[in-house]
Image (cartoon, rainbow, N blue to C red; front, side, top):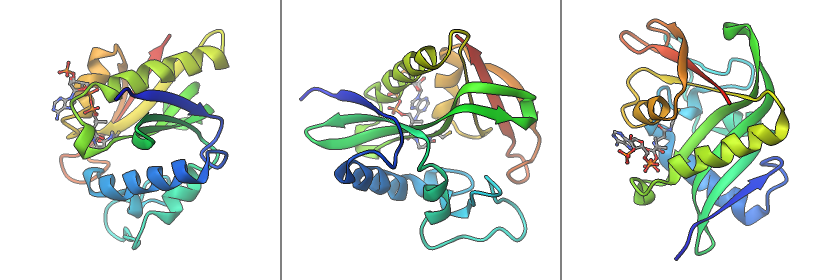
Length: 180
Ligand SMILES: CC(C)(COP(=O)(O)OP(=O)(O)OC[C@H]1O[C@@H](n2cnc3c(N)ncnc32)[C@H](O)[C@@H]1OP(=O)(O)O)[C@@H](O)C(=O)NCCC(=O)NCCS
């Protein structure tokens, strides 16, 4: 069965069945994130450290990505991987606006190691090139994310900022940028 990649202008515009699959991915992967997505709010972006509230489900996070573009990897009618991407995102920490800011990347556990994340990135770069003649792609992750960091390095992202212990003792937030 072959994998197809689709770009939706926004998550909110995607068909209900796609949204339902993406929600399932988010729920499945929630504890793979640090902090979990259900500890986030649209206002704060991240809620970490003392006083952080863990919601039952990541509703605030889900609301925050409704207007982001959605890239899916689908096989046999099921979404196996997703990216949510904000267009022209001002990043105060980097003092720049990224053409495309990758806010979420998830591949279903059952589909990992098949190159889907790498292929989703290829679609993300195409999208950024459609959005701008001088495109840049940014993302951020936590410093102990052993699966994502090697891929980010292989794709040629530059580390632009490291916020030490931002997500707990020994867990930094790291910002990456790739001019295309
Ligand atoms: C990170 C993630 C998206 C990778 O998805 P994937 O489809 O399995 O990744 P790919 O198969 O495309 O792998 C591409 C490269 O990533 C790196 N990689 C992927 N999984 C890895 C792992 N478990 N350990 C180390 N490197 C890994 C490798 O460099 C790999 O290249 P290689 O196969 O040539 O060695 C997936 O593990 C995931 O969804 N994790 C949970 C959510 C998450 O951490 N998202 C990113 C948050 S910022």
